[in-house]
Image 1 (cartoon, rainbow, N blue to C red):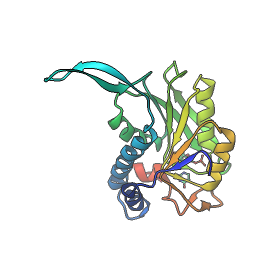
Image 2 (tube, rainbow, N blue to C red):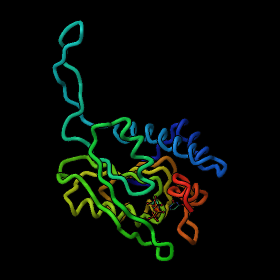
Image 3 (cartoon, rainbow, N blue to C red):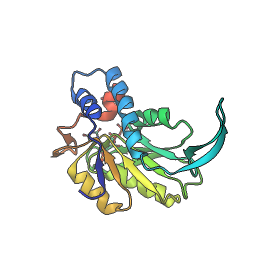
Image 4 (cartoon, helix red, strand yellow):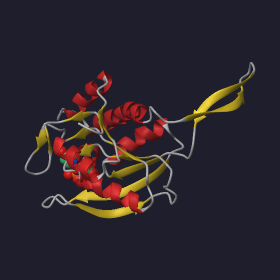
Length: 209
Ligand code: PRP
Ligand code: URA
Protein backbone atom coordinates (compact mmCIF):
# COMPACT_ATOMS: atom_id res chain seq x y z
CA UNK A 1 0.00 0.00 0.00
CA UNK A 2 1.16 3.49 -0.81
CA UNK A 3 2.30 5.90 1.84
CA UNK A 4 2.30 3.29 4.63
CA UNK A 5 5.30 1.98 6.52
CA UNK A 6 4.74 -1.16 8.56
CA UNK A 7 7.39 -1.23 11.26
CA UNK A 8 7.76 -4.96 11.71
CA UNK A 9 10.78 -5.13 14.01
CA UNK A 10 10.72 -8.42 15.95
CA UNK A 11 10.64 -6.65 19.33
CA UNK A 12 7.59 -4.63 18.25
CA UNK A 13 5.82 -7.72 16.97
CA UNK A 14 6.56 -9.61 20.20
CA UNK A 15 5.30 -6.78 22.40
CA UNK A 16 2.25 -6.26 20.19
CA UNK A 17 1.30 -9.91 20.68
CA UNK A 18 1.41 -9.37 24.44
CA UNK A 19 -0.75 -6.26 24.08
CA UNK A 20 -3.36 -8.09 22.00
CA UNK A 21 -3.68 -10.85 24.62
CA UNK A 22 -6.86 -10.26 26.61
CA UNK A 23 -5.13 -11.58 29.77
CA UNK A 24 -2.58 -8.74 29.77
CA UNK A 25 -3.11 -6.44 32.76
CA UNK A 26 -3.78 -2.71 32.53
CA UNK A 27 -0.31 -1.98 33.93
CA UNK A 28 1.26 -4.37 31.44
CA UNK A 29 -0.70 -2.89 28.54
CA UNK A 30 0.45 0.64 29.40
CA UNK A 31 4.06 -0.41 29.85
CA UNK A 32 4.12 -2.28 26.55
CA UNK A 33 2.57 0.65 24.68
CA UNK A 34 5.24 2.96 26.05
CA UNK A 35 8.00 0.52 25.09
CA UNK A 36 6.62 0.08 21.57
CA UNK A 37 6.36 3.88 21.29
CA UNK A 38 10.14 4.06 21.77
CA UNK A 39 10.70 1.67 18.88
CA UNK A 40 8.14 3.36 16.61
CA UNK A 41 9.55 6.79 17.45
CA UNK A 42 12.98 5.59 16.33
CA UNK A 43 11.53 4.64 12.93
CA UNK A 44 9.27 7.65 12.36
CA UNK A 45 12.17 10.04 13.08
CA UNK A 46 14.76 8.05 11.11
CA UNK A 47 15.19 10.68 8.37
CA UNK A 48 15.28 13.84 10.52
CA UNK A 49 17.81 16.36 9.27
CA UNK A 50 20.98 17.00 11.22
CA UNK A 51 23.39 19.92 11.34
CA UNK A 52 26.90 20.11 12.68
CA UNK A 53 27.63 22.26 15.73
CA UNK A 54 30.92 22.98 17.46
CA UNK A 55 31.35 21.41 20.91
CA UNK A 56 34.28 20.57 23.12
CA UNK A 57 34.74 17.06 24.43
CA UNK A 58 37.04 16.66 27.46
CA UNK A 59 39.70 15.80 24.86
CA UNK A 60 39.37 18.40 22.10
CA UNK A 61 36.97 20.61 20.09
CA UNK A 62 34.93 18.90 17.37
CA UNK A 63 31.99 19.37 15.02
CA UNK A 64 29.13 17.09 16.06
CA UNK A 65 25.62 16.41 14.68
CA UNK A 66 22.47 17.74 16.29
CA UNK A 67 18.84 17.88 15.16
CA UNK A 68 18.26 20.68 12.68
CA UNK A 69 15.33 23.06 12.49
CA UNK A 70 12.35 23.83 14.68
CA UNK A 71 11.31 21.55 17.53
CA UNK A 72 9.06 18.60 16.63
CA UNK A 73 5.41 18.60 17.60
CA UNK A 74 3.70 15.44 18.84
CA UNK A 75 -0.08 15.66 18.51
CA UNK A 76 -1.89 13.17 20.71
CA UNK A 77 -5.47 12.15 19.96
CA UNK A 78 -7.03 11.72 23.40
CA UNK A 79 -7.33 9.54 25.29
CA UNK A 80 -5.38 6.60 23.93
CA UNK A 81 -2.85 8.74 22.02
CA UNK A 82 -1.31 9.64 25.36
CA UNK A 83 0.02 6.11 25.72
CA UNK A 84 2.16 6.58 22.62
CA UNK A 85 2.91 10.20 23.48
CA UNK A 86 4.64 9.31 26.75
CA UNK A 87 7.04 6.95 25.03
CA UNK A 88 7.73 9.46 22.26
CA UNK A 89 8.54 12.14 24.83
CA UNK A 90 10.99 9.77 26.52
CA UNK A 91 13.06 9.92 23.32
CA UNK A 92 12.39 13.53 22.27
CA UNK A 93 11.85 15.37 25.55
CA UNK A 94 12.04 18.84 23.97
CA UNK A 95 9.16 18.18 21.55
CA UNK A 96 6.14 20.48 21.70
CA UNK A 97 2.79 18.78 22.31
CA UNK A 98 -0.69 19.25 20.90
CA UNK A 99 -3.70 17.58 22.55
CA UNK A 100 -6.74 16.80 20.44
CA UNK A 101 -9.76 15.54 22.37
CA UNK A 102 -11.93 13.31 20.18
CA UNK A 103 -14.15 10.34 20.90
CA UNK A 104 -16.11 8.18 18.50
CA UNK A 105 -19.86 8.26 18.71
CA UNK A 106 -20.66 4.55 19.15
CA UNK A 107 -23.59 4.61 16.71
CA UNK A 108 -22.40 6.92 13.93
CA UNK A 109 -18.64 6.27 14.38
CA UNK A 110 -18.15 9.98 13.76
CA UNK A 111 -15.60 11.81 15.94
CA UNK A 112 -16.90 14.26 18.53
CA UNK A 113 -14.42 16.97 19.43
CA UNK A 114 -14.21 18.08 23.07
CA UNK A 115 -10.74 19.64 23.37
CA UNK A 116 -8.03 21.20 21.23
CA UNK A 117 -4.82 22.85 22.37
CA UNK A 118 -1.76 23.15 20.16
CA UNK A 119 1.38 25.27 19.92
CA UNK A 120 0.52 28.43 17.97
CA UNK A 121 3.25 28.23 15.31
CA UNK A 122 2.73 24.91 13.53
CA UNK A 123 4.09 26.03 10.14
CA UNK A 124 7.39 24.48 9.05
CA UNK A 125 7.45 22.01 11.93
CA UNK A 126 7.27 18.25 11.60
CA UNK A 127 4.07 17.20 13.36
CA UNK A 128 3.67 13.55 14.31
CA UNK A 129 0.06 12.71 15.12
CA UNK A 130 -0.18 9.74 17.49
CA UNK A 131 -3.07 7.40 18.25
CA UNK A 132 -2.73 3.64 18.77
CA UNK A 133 -5.75 2.78 16.60
CA UNK A 134 -6.61 3.67 12.99
CA UNK A 135 -9.99 2.00 12.51
CA UNK A 136 -12.50 3.87 10.29
CA UNK A 137 -9.90 6.70 10.24
CA UNK A 138 -12.61 9.25 11.03
CA UNK A 139 -10.77 10.43 14.16
CA UNK A 140 -7.37 10.65 12.47
CA UNK A 141 -8.79 12.47 9.44
CA UNK A 142 -10.53 15.02 11.68
CA UNK A 143 -7.42 15.55 13.81
CA UNK A 144 -5.22 16.17 10.77
CA UNK A 145 -7.82 18.52 9.25
CA UNK A 146 -7.86 20.55 12.45
CA UNK A 147 -4.06 20.77 12.52
CA UNK A 148 -3.95 21.81 8.86
CA UNK A 149 -6.53 24.55 9.57
CA UNK A 150 -4.03 25.84 12.17
CA UNK A 151 -1.20 25.97 9.65
CA UNK A 152 0.35 22.49 9.87
CA UNK A 153 2.00 21.64 6.56
CA UNK A 154 4.33 18.72 7.36
CA UNK A 155 2.63 15.81 9.10
CA UNK A 156 3.03 12.10 9.77
CA UNK A 157 0.52 9.76 11.40
CA UNK A 158 1.80 7.11 13.82
CA UNK A 159 -0.32 4.27 15.17
CA UNK A 160 0.03 0.78 16.55
CA UNK A 161 -2.72 -1.01 14.65
CA UNK A 162 -4.52 -0.08 11.45
CA UNK A 163 -7.46 -1.56 9.56
CA UNK A 164 -7.05 -1.73 5.76
CA UNK A 165 -10.28 0.29 5.42
CA UNK A 166 -8.83 3.03 7.64
CA UNK A 167 -5.52 3.15 5.77
CA UNK A 168 -7.37 3.50 2.47
CA UNK A 169 -9.71 6.23 3.70
CA UNK A 170 -6.99 8.20 5.48
CA UNK A 171 -4.68 8.06 2.44
CA UNK A 172 -7.47 9.35 0.22
CA UNK A 173 -8.29 12.22 2.61
CA UNK A 174 -4.66 13.16 3.35
CA UNK A 175 -2.38 11.77 0.62
CA UNK A 176 0.39 14.07 1.84
CA UNK A 177 0.52 12.45 5.30
CA UNK A 178 2.48 9.18 5.53
CA UNK A 179 1.26 6.50 7.94
CA UNK A 180 3.56 4.50 10.21
CA UNK A 181 2.06 1.47 11.94
CA UNK A 182 3.21 -1.72 13.67
CA UNK A 183 0.58 -3.84 11.88
CA UNK A 184 -2.29 -3.77 9.42
CA UNK A 185 -4.99 -6.17 10.61
CA UNK A 186 -7.67 -8.07 8.68
CA UNK A 187 -10.76 -5.85 8.66
CA UNK A 188 -13.25 -3.79 10.68
CA UNK A 189 -16.28 -5.43 12.25
CA UNK A 190 -19.81 -4.00 12.00
CA UNK A 191 -19.17 -1.86 15.10
CA UNK A 192 -16.01 -0.32 13.67
CA UNK A 193 -13.58 -2.38 15.77
CA UNK A 194 -10.33 -3.68 14.32
CA UNK A 195 -10.30 -7.48 13.89
CA UNK A 196 -8.42 -9.29 15.38
CA UNK A 197 -7.15 -6.04 16.96
CA UNK A 198 -6.69 -5.61 20.69
CA UNK A 199 -10.09 -4.29 21.77
CA UNK A 200 -10.71 -0.75 22.92
CA UNK A 201 -7.29 0.82 23.45
CA UNK A 202 -8.51 3.59 25.79
CA UNK A 203 -10.44 1.15 27.98
CA UNK A 204 -7.52 -1.25 28.17
CA UNK A 205 -5.14 1.59 29.11
CA UNK A 206 -7.30 3.18 31.74
CA UNK A 207 -9.49 0.35 33.06
CA UNK A 208 -12.75 1.89 31.86
CA UNK A 209 -15.56 0.19 29.94
C1 PRP B 1 -10.27 5.20 19.73
C2 PRP B 1 -8.85 5.33 19.25
C3 PRP B 1 -8.97 6.32 18.12
C4 PRP B 1 -10.32 5.97 17.53
C5 PRP B 1 -10.08 5.19 16.27
O1 PRP B 1 -10.62 6.27 20.51
O2 PRP B 1 -7.96 5.74 20.25
O3 PRP B 1 -8.94 7.67 18.52
O4 PRP B 1 -11.00 5.17 18.49
O5 PRP B 1 -11.27 4.93 15.63
P1 PRP B 1 -11.64 5.54 14.20
O6 PRP B 1 -10.44 5.34 13.34
O7 PRP B 1 -12.81 4.71 13.78
O8 PRP B 1 -12.00 6.98 14.37
P2 PRP B 1 -12.06 6.43 21.19
O9 PRP B 1 -12.96 7.20 20.28
O10 PRP B 1 -12.56 5.10 21.66
O11 PRP B 1 -11.77 7.39 22.40
P3 PRP B 1 -10.86 7.17 23.70
O12 PRP B 1 -9.42 7.15 23.24
O13 PRP B 1 -11.17 8.34 24.54
O14 PRP B 1 -11.24 5.85 24.33
N1 URA C 1 -10.82 2.12 18.67
C1 URA C 1 -10.26 1.19 19.47
O1 URA C 1 -9.81 1.50 20.58
N2 URA C 1 -10.21 -0.08 19.03
C2 URA C 1 -10.69 -0.46 17.84
O2 URA C 1 -10.60 -1.65 17.49
C3 URA C 1 -11.27 0.52 17.02
C4 URA C 1 -11.31 1.81 17.46
